Image (cartoon, rainbow, N blue to C red; front, side):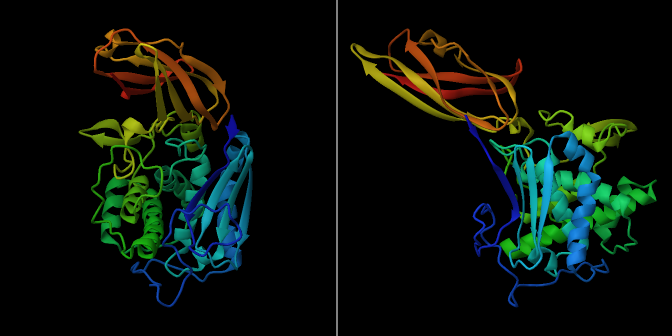
Length: 405
């Protein structure tokens, strides 16, 4: 089994440095130049002078809010500040108990990124480490959309509550949304304004830099994905995510953010409370332009290799090899079973694969033997079932197809 070193980025510079561990996810990101649009209209939303002291202060403040949580999870977090760097880059890495977040100064210095936009950036990177499911395939870090959602639903709100600023908002859409959601709580409205506009700063920067256009609150991304997008959604989808997080009240306010999100790493629940017809209900506000509840379990996908061989007398038997990655430590049981129709033609002769695995280990080439019990040209379908600690966490109907000649 192999140990996977996780590396996740917010942005990436096309000018590669000697730091080869950076992950190349945003090929369009470049250092600032006179040809790049430098400003975004925020109305009278504040933006202050940029200094190395503020660059480090914001990050250290946020990390301090989660120091106990990180320690409880066995993490040893180190932050690195590269103020002179010209890379528009920030990334988080997790290797066993060694956690790391690196920030390049050009990202904070960019005039399109407000102080609060940078605070959202820090929360995003911390969200990779603390944001919970859905995770990136084969990694212990949260998917990009989940890092955004955790950043706005949890981290930024916590920061802006602890460190309030007098900010006057002029964006009517944001004001209407936050005022309606928190109509009886002026303090919560202000936190909502700030959180949403912090997300607007970050999403606008990314949209202008990578796509050449600025996202808008009034034009949400209407795409509905069949599977959860583990990588970076488009800027409009990310803005929708920041807004959704700002308007989300986590269910059961008596439970702390850390307990709710980190208490059960397997869960994909992240419900918000809403009052509908006088009744309190739970809803999932994660935008469908990146999130799909059906396919965001700890197993995002599997890869198969089917190898059948002819023996004397025709096709009699063969092997199926399955590659997969797991995210959590514990006992896994993987089995194949033919669909009802196919059961008359094929029998899987290998017992279910059972093994206790370490966190984020990779298991390759699990071998399942089969034999045909009847002949005739038929398409045989087998279902793939994965259990974790006795509970089914993944079932793919018709996952593997075999043709009987």
